[in-house]
View 1 (cartoon, rainbow, N blue to C red):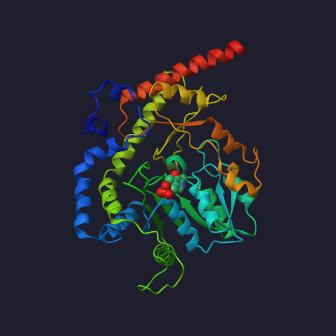
View 2 (cartoon, helix red, strand yellow; view 1 turned 180 degrees about the horizontal axis):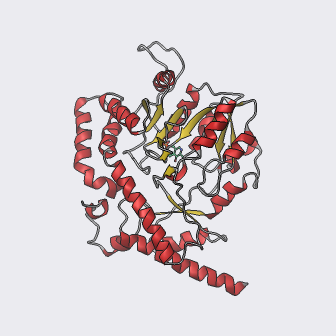
View 3 (cartoon, rainbow, N blue to C red; view 1 turned 90 degrees about the vertical axis):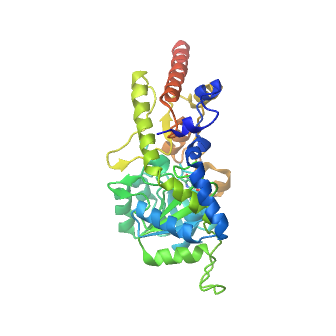
Length: 400
Ligand SMILES: *Cc1c(COP(=O)(O)O)cnc(C)c1O
């Protein structure tokens, strides 16, 4: 099989392409499917049906099956999926919603936009996901729902979370935007809570050609309400039962995503192989104790949307600069936790409010893990990190 890397025309022919290691290679990933995707888009073009329609219905069915969920409802983005989920649960002013602070902004933005109060809790240091003990401690009579985020491709500790939410009668909206296909004790992400939210933003494991999102649920009534809400609450045409929004999924996105969905498992397997190889390489270079390498629990099936390494001792930003100087892409997810964002200042959080979260924002860096990554590229990433760490540690020893 030709890997996406080899399929890019500029590869191998230019010396830069061999040595450069991009964080993501979206064009390279799409290139082998170019003809198939363009044919799917052409089919939509010729049909003249651009919003919802047969391709969206088919994608909804395919995602529902893939997620072991009874229903899947397409919408315009992962951010909208979160907002629609909370709308379907009637969350609004006076309500509190508990969520981690170490996540993409959309998780909290959805709560805020509905007039509810985001209540941020700390994470577990090993998988960066919601700490169930902190969740329990944050529950008040105003708490209506919890949003566990399955961050970086790995599920949160759902048994512990669901035990608490069931005991307190709270709704659970899973933010599975980074974890399509991830499993928790045999259950797929998005099928564990009341509603699951997915994103097909181009950088996700299943990325579209623009914005797109999906909701999953096993609840017939919630599925019906979500379908109403994404289309202005309209049923039948020009009769509005409830006030919804316009958040429909484009047919072209659905058609393109269906082509890619058929390859998702194979890509995710390659990501997992890349993660295993990183582990071996970091050990070979004696770095497994000097860095915090990502862990995978046997209960969970990691989808490796991101490969996250902890760099101790305030050296993370310097490492990132070093990698950039040798043409290796990386990213910081996320440099500022949500409880310390300017827009949430009125909530009254301070530096130190969520120490594990704040430490993660200082220490973590995402390394290239995409399916198109070659062994040589991975070797370069690890060798450059070793070079940096050795210099950094020598400097510290001399200073001491
Ligand atoms: C990407 C992402 C979202 C938002 O999805 P969009 O499709 O970009 O709106 C929400 N939550 C998390 C954790 C994400 O990574």
